[in-house]
Image (cartoon, rainbow, N blue to C red; front, side):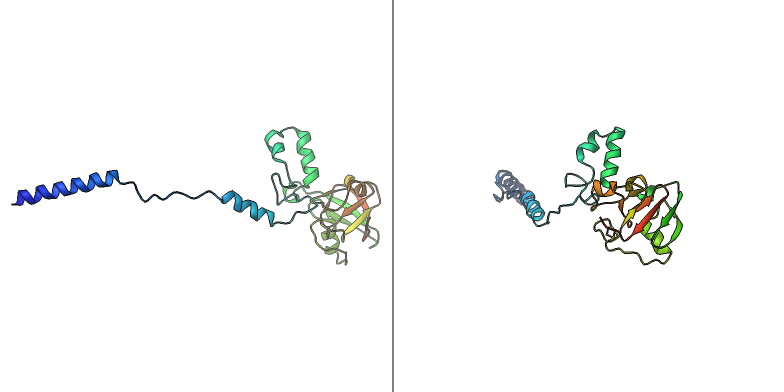
Length: 191
Ligand code: FES
């Protein structure tokens, strides 16, 4: 009797295994991949800007270092050009140097470090200097360097506002301008 039950049980299990082996599943199929479409729709909702955005669209988005420059850009010329276009990082300055800057309207000459902005240095003196965005994106803080083209006297960590010509004429953005030489500046002067 026990043998018969065991035999029947074995047969039943074998039958179940055979049925499962030939079963065709539920017929479910994966839907179409729409992730790219969703990303494109999201991208379309982000407004385009006219000015370059050096730090928030790193690759292929209208600012920063182009992908090709990263891939192929190991010559010095290309690196220098990208710094000019996207500014520089003042926190990377290792050797701090000081320059005598004359603030013509304030009637004083003060020492300004090459890792602080002209605006910050003036504010440390308690001068009420004009500013707004403090990011190089407006003209509120503009000043005029009397000694020549601005780029010979300051480096901008970011500049979305002034043209080459305006900088050649001595204008700088004091909120993002770090001194590289001594000069005289008139604050509150816009091109
Ligand atoms: S405060 Fe806007 S550019 Fe300096």
